[in-house]
Image (cartoon, rainbow, N blue to C red; front, side, top):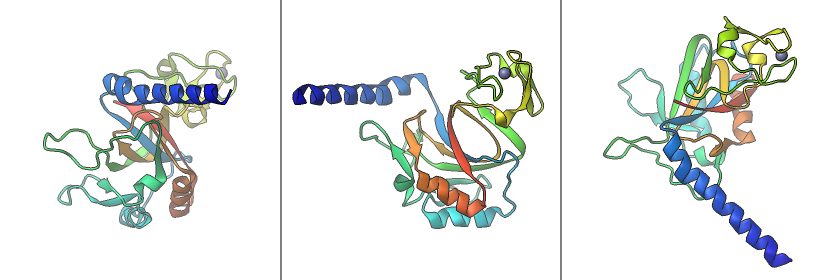
Length: 209
Ligand SMILES: [Zn+2]
């Protein structure tokens, strides 16, 4: 009895490893994990103070290219305490190699108005907040910041839909590059830390380009 259970566990682990390293690399060229505030129109007014707080928390380190205005940062020394990688021991690259291939770094993006980030190649159907059904062809039913559900006849704000962690609507995003969907999960300690820094609740999703 005990032996059988152990064998089952081994088999499960092998499946996870195959999914993570082989198939996902082949199907997605560039995927990221995004952290964003629940309040869609939340924006930071003091960017240097926000960056400093993130550096102090150990999520991010110094800017990748200090000459550029791009808000791109190396991962900080507490990065792996905040982001838990699943499956086999992942080979995470924290710096670009000679060929300048993909590596894991952090982008801070702030848009002038709330923006929906989603996988444009394979958009997923969000669930309507009223009837809870998946709404296909939602892109045709989107007007400004609302989406009309033809299944129940209600129109709701984009942020009210359940995007099933595959899209997010916000003004401010912290993007962590080179993470495949569900390959790594932000820990509650990180979401709490971001809430403490900004005074608003945070959530996350994955998207590939
Ligand atoms: Zn509906």
